Length: 257
Image: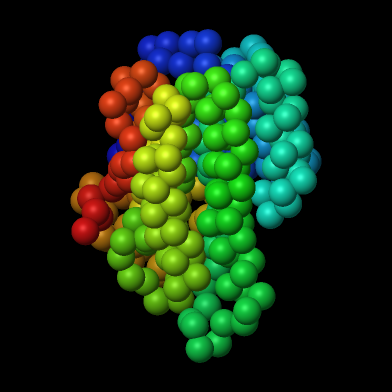
């Protein structure tokens, strides 16, 4: 069984925090909620406008404050620029960016089309690059800020049918490490989390029971992570408690190689 939901400790009080792919019931929404509970001023984004508005309403009901919600498809440079501009216009600064947007899929490489490959890579890797680049432009001017990217243990280990997703997530890890060196002189930190299996209703709907059982059996605790357990690690990396950490990819599982 999962542990009790944690109490807040004010780790992000006063921090303007932007979370991409924050609609739905997965890690993005859990992260937006945990950041808000820890005192952050949250901005949420997603390409699904209806679900994004529902997420903003749910956060308002939980925390008493409705976050700014800006629709954004991270495959569009224009929309990414608009998202970051709207955030800074509304709040005057940007302290934390959580790049959660990613796209999965299952296809063995011999049968995979170019379109399938590019769809996954453009959201998961290039989308993370676009948002990281936009964040750096604001944060280097401020000389402060934190970027947390959502990678995956599949960037380390192999799984059939996942060559496009694994390549994209391994790319996110490499991007994180390289950008961290570039950003350090400007007072900006860049880290990533690498979850393995964090089950939520949408994932359960699109994944076979057999595969979920197989993946769960690989976990040290014999269960999948709750999305908020991954969000807790993101909150730590976003907070001042990790002030000397940069360029790290933190495994949120027992599956680091």
